[in-house]
Amino acid sequence: ARRPAWALALAAVPVLALAAIAAVTLSGGDGDGGGGDTTAPATTAAPDGPAVAGTVARTVRVSGRPNGVVASGGLVWVLRSRSNRVLALRAPNGQRASFRPRVGSFPAAMAAGFGRLWVGNQGQSQLVAIGLRSHRRIGAAIQLPTEGKVVGVAAGERGVWVGIRGDPGRIVRVSPGERRIVKEIPMPDGVQDLAVGEGAVWVIGRRSNTVTRVDVASGEMRAINVGADPAGIAIGGHAVWVANSGDDTVTRVDAGSLVTRVIGVGDGPYRIAAGDDVVWVANRNESTLTRIDPETNRAVADPVEVASNPFALDVSGSRVWVTSPPDSTVQRIDF
Image (tube, rainbow, N blue to C red; front, side):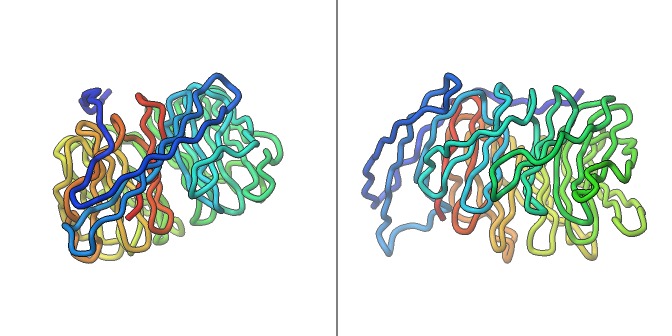
């Protein structure tokens, strides 16, 4: 199986020129043996200073190797591979909420949509729904195929879509109302990750350097060549953005014409997130984030140094939240 090479390099919060930095420390516990320290450097750049992509504004220490993050409804939901509970942080300060719903063992992916947070676990191969208002589990867990492992969850385009790694891989559509699988589609090239939008499901192949567009209405498939070892995918600004861990690039795919464009980023891009007018890429090997301007299709200024081997990230307004499994942290970057 293909795995991108990456080093466990330690990264520090960057100190920017012409900036004044003050540190604030908060303490708290999550009730399952994790640390609760939060460090929040506040930075103010000079008006005429050099352009920066973003600034690390807060660091929250959690337990259990955080491997997923979704910002929705004033909360930042955090998955931890070593915990059967999902953690909720209050935005923007990162303080822990009191509720920690159970989501099953080895939670691997999640997405927000249809008024729910949908969490896929690998331990029981289930999809668990949590109310975004009630903050509680809703109904029984939805059973997924047991042949393979859950690797991606995306909400939209007529349902909740789950990517399952196996031989072959497959994607399944779950009806939020009926709470059952209503469609299964085999993916011969396997499944690395998936995203939904623009009338389609976009699936990164596990065994090919392609993204397959699956039309939701017709089921028609079309493979699109991308960079080497594609690892993460996001949709924003009428485009599909793919992080290619093997050649340090991002491929932009026009959602209509399917014309591609290649953008150079940092070392070992692995996950990617898109907002209304920004795209962020987590570069695992060098422990940085690259910010891309979707209007110019270029990186903005220098990468932002973050904690070790950044993994999952999500954009919310003018902030991006990113996890570091080795350092057991979640960081907030303001831009």
